[in-house]
Amino acid sequence: MSLVQAIDDAHFAEEAINIGEPVLVQFWAPWCGPCRMLSPVIEEVAQEYEGKVRFFKVNVDENPQSAMQFQATSIPLLAFIRNNPESGGREAHLSVGFLPKEEVKRFIDGLL
Image (tube, rainbow, N blue to C red; front, top):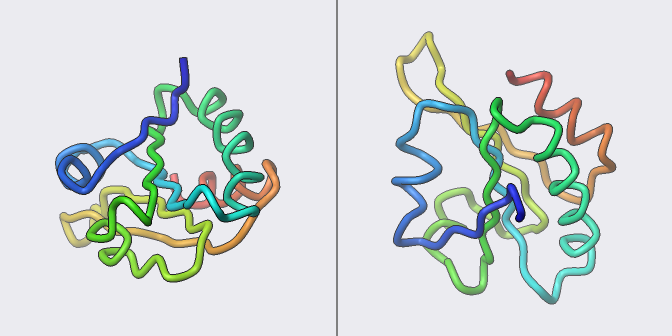
């Protein structure tokens, strides 16, 4: 079973935004070669961060509202969403393009 859950526009805010734990969202499309290369990397990272970070993927073609919310005009796009104690709200950090596993982990570790 995959630890990376597909999510749609109807459930995006409820599942990825309005929860207290950190979230990594992969914005992707089936026709995107770098997206297809990144997906197994994200699956591996999700196993290593199980219980610390929730992982989701959003197909930008099928879910334009979520994609627009994060200005996902270039994909793959990773959005790391976490609580910001200073503002009392949620904040998102973005990374565009393919990243090898160690870079994805560094991106997450720098924000946890």
